Amino acid sequence: MVVIYGVLRSRVTRPVWLMRELGQPFELVPVMQAYRLEHPQAADAPFNTASPDFLTLNPAGQIPVMVDGDLVLTESMAIPFYLAKKFGGPLAPASAEEEAEALQWAFAAITGIEGPALDMLQVIQFKRTDTEEGQAVLAKAQQQLARPLSRLEGHLAEHDFLVGDRFTVADILMAECVRYVQAHAPAMEPYPAIRTWLGRCQSRPAFRDMMEERAAEPL
Ligand SMILES: N[C@@H](CCC(=O)N[C@@H](CS)C(=O)NCC(=O)O)C(=O)O
Image 1 (tube, helix red, strand yellow):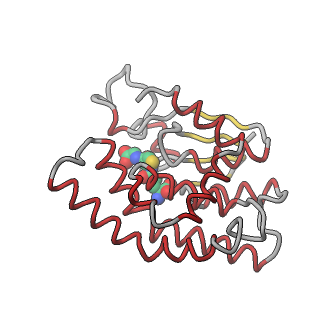
Image 2 (cartoon, protein in one colour):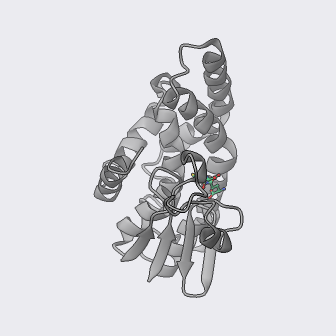
Image 3 (cartoon, protein in one colour):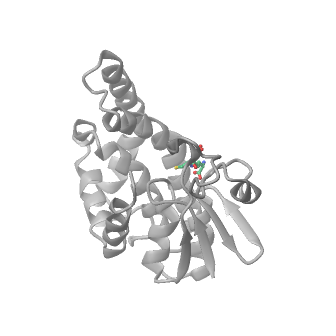
């Protein structure tokens, strides 16, 4: 059985959302980010990204990690592609062209959107919006996001989904990067088609159930 290591308050949502969509059984082994623990090396610390046993799985000390038989895979964008291909169905690219388009959107998400979107999320999460520095980070991130989000908006103004006129792994990977931007509503304002598409993705039962489980995890 596929085993995914990590907690849902992380990029682990990407493979977990996909597995829930596929209806495939899998095991989720909780691994907390070391930086969230005061004493990650303490004997009574929960299993975390600095635990020696975890570092043998991923020497980079990051979640998610997926294990399927002899295959140990890292990277939250690569794992869902593997799982979609392995378990098949309409979530997976159906041709070389669809695969290329799905990769195109995944790379656009991770190189153009994830970074500034996370900067934005952190300002909101750590309640720095009232500070001059927080406002500067928000403004810079919004500016960096303008080009990739406008490109996405243009596509979604004419299509319901990213690839093949159906919900696929590409929508999961992009939606999970754009979700960070939602924390700052003004940044989503110029993009009505993205907001509609995100609502479509996030109303899916697999996403909603996962987010309920995530909310029950310790902060
Ligand atoms: N490029 C990696 C980044 C993974 C990553 O940064 N994971 C974070 C959680 S979302 C983590 O494990 N941080 C733990 C740490 O840095 O100690 C991916 O997409 O999987």
